[in-house]
Image (cartoon, rainbow, N blue to C red; front, top):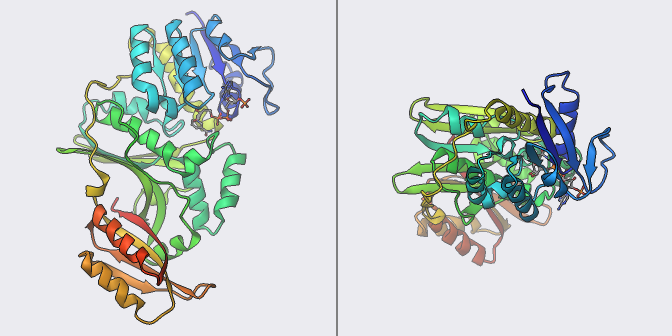
Length: 417
Ligand SMILES: NC(=O)c1ccc[n+]([C@@H]2O[C@H](COP(=O)([O-])OP(=O)(O)OC[C@H]3O[C@@H](n4cnc5c(N)ncnc54)[C@H](OP(=O)(O)O)[C@@H]3O)[C@@H](O)[C@H]2O)c1
């Protein structure tokens, strides 16, 4: 059998992780050859040996390779690189969820037109198997919901904050360990998880990729005390991305949630990702594993390379039907229970005012607790609400914020998973 000739573009965390796995593979990858690397500079963490290096990554496209592995990240240059590779008859493997979310339809159509493959197992949950499982192994199932923690950095930050660490110190640690995206703001602002749930929704519901105008919220406003107050009710804070299908359309969202500590997802700490699938034949099941890091991502990339080398003729994955455009439901119409955190002036009558505003908006209060005074003589009030439509909750929050005794406010939606 002819060797699978590989060109790697990018020479950062993931690319060097893949390279090291391949060269240290004890002969497992004897049928593969890393022909060249596109790296605009050396990486002191990895010795590329005698492998040919191109300083211009686009020269990798012209090299004698079967597959280009795109590991530069970002959108436009990556799209250009993948486009040129596919048009040159090269297969492409990528870990880049941003480019697949933004341009996946066009790129997959280009791959089909050029009779080559575009595979992206590592774009969601790094090496934890999800993409080919969804597109191949679950094809007999109707999937009604995919909900999960899809960003390793965010889960690493939140689970360390739960243990008392500060947001800033854990983010720095995530960057040092290579878990964070090249631009970590995409991790913490919820965009990375949004890209991933968009890709999963297309695969799960066999439809086109959604537009990015669904509700996306990050973890920047989560504070240590949220974990303390959540713990009083046997809950914790996670970042969740959800795609849910019903007869009216698709609910798509990416935001922090409070989860019961009894939930399987709540128990996943560190860079672990977890996804709960709701299906008609298999019922409900959870896939969990490492969602970031060079080894984990290398595992997913190598599974794509294996799929390519094994199935030169048949397609290693079923692509979704892009002609079916998803009908996204309006986030304002969704119903949640809420954790409401208010910082209020330490004055008599404030609790009565809060209760009045909630009553005016027909928001049922499940629990309301006044906490110990903060340093600045304000008092935290924590409220757990009954289910209410999002739009009504937003108006009530605005009414509260308009009142001078309310100094600060925040909501976290409560998820029953
Ligand atoms: N890190 C993870 O845990 C993880 C997990 C799953 C998926 N991914 C995905 O894997 C990809 C790579 O991530 P990473 O963590 O390896 O990032 P990284 O460490 O920042 O590496 C990116 C590499 O690409 C190069 N590069 C970027 N833009 C370039 C351009 N325009 N021309 C030439 N080279 C360019 C960078 O070169 P310079 O050093 O010169 O900037 C660097 O060598 C991303 O798509 C990411 O979303 C990462």
